[in-house]
Length: 249
Image 1 (spheres, rainbow, N blue to C red):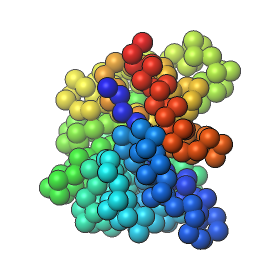
Image 2 (image 1 turned 90 degrees about the vertical axis):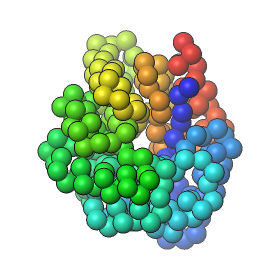
Image 3 (image 1 turned 30 degrees about the vertical axis):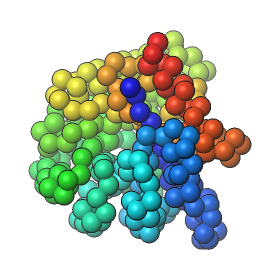
Image 4 (image 1 turned 45 degrees about the vertical axis):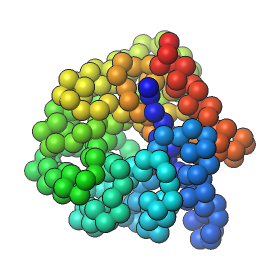
């Protein structure tokens, strides 16, 4: 059954706007859990623009569902992950200029370094994942470095959906969806878990959730945005209902 990992980075974004103590991302994680989330995702960035080190430590201590730590493949972040030991560490590209992660990690272009990072995380008992574009060479490279999970970047699909008037039958949208499907099939054929995420929302999530073999979606901004109006529990529950309906046909 498809699972939902809720990214709570932007709860911390609101807090950091005032450099204060609220809203508390850990409280948001508990509310997400009560709404039906199967996991919590946070991205500890090099510049600490939203999630802070103490947030990750408190989440590790207090959450009772899976913790997925998004991270750059740096020595600092590997050290933090090996110390905190989340259930999963997802390697992502990172740039200080970007508002959010844009584009997948170029695994094929840095296999030797990433293979070492994956080995260090694996030795610490952490499931490793990569966030990649829906490209077969990247899937193949991910398999070679030894990750257990590939998360496909759904941003191009989401942007096509919006630009085509939210028409999920338009050729542009179907083309992007087919790329995700093919990448997912290759991921599964290589013995890895097929996850997906980025820019998914309440209007575009179902075609992705209905793809064969997809295991987990990671969604943040749309859920946090909806939570402003209906609360975190209801926002999570509504997203999960949509995902489960799509998977069940």
